[in-house]
Length: 339
Image 1: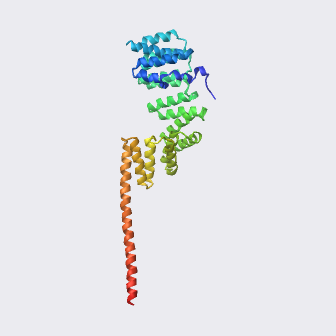
Image 2: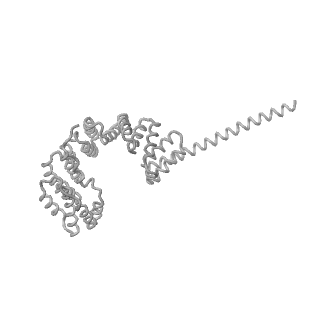
Image 3: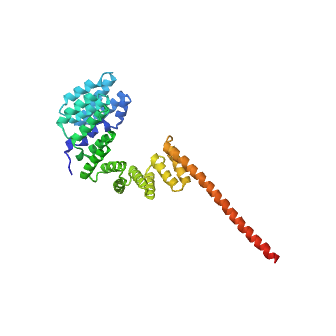
């Protein structure tokens, strides 16, 4: 399969702030700079090489924040000291972006890109910076430059930006080209399925999602979206089975509202308003402000009441028929005894 050496791949993504999830990072953005710095220093004690340099960049930012000084100059000096180190440039750019210094972050990343032209982390972070400045054209250009066909993660981000720019047909073309190289990549297949459905190709989406459910049967979103495309194609039984698989995979009380609501909708439409209403009520517990669930619940309750009235009417008809039969039999008995 086509690819690039590890030094220029998305393995540097650990340094990009878009995927940072450690506790110190939460502290930093809650302006608890002392706590963030303490955690970082503990982390630094067990690090060497590029990892240590990346952590040092954030420590510098914490120190400057605590002193009430501008972060930009301090981290730029650090980047200049290590100007040949791509990892440092990426981390510093991440710090600058977090402080909304996108112009400086773009300058740092553009320099780093000269050192590593096919580094996907640089391309994605550049795109994010341009997006922060509401420059979708710039974001798209950066991702196209690195070669989206060869990198599934880049292709997906490029498709996302194209969608935001209302270019869904171009987005699906990007994904299709990458899929032709990486037909087993799960993320590409899922994105392809989502776009295919949105562009009026539910059968293609069903094919991709069915394969995903077979290959990775424990993903709620795979079953949920398979239910959606089957519902669109009026394959209600398969849709219901798919939604219920998705529901079974969720923790109690944590199933996605739309999955619960769609189960209710299928049951309502198939003539089971009581069961449908129960699912809509559950959906509203998950998302109390859902207009979809409120409207469908009201319709289900209306259908339930109508069916109850029809049931009572049928019962009355049945009672009248039985009473007529009893009267006929009694009349026959009376007539017989007179003879």
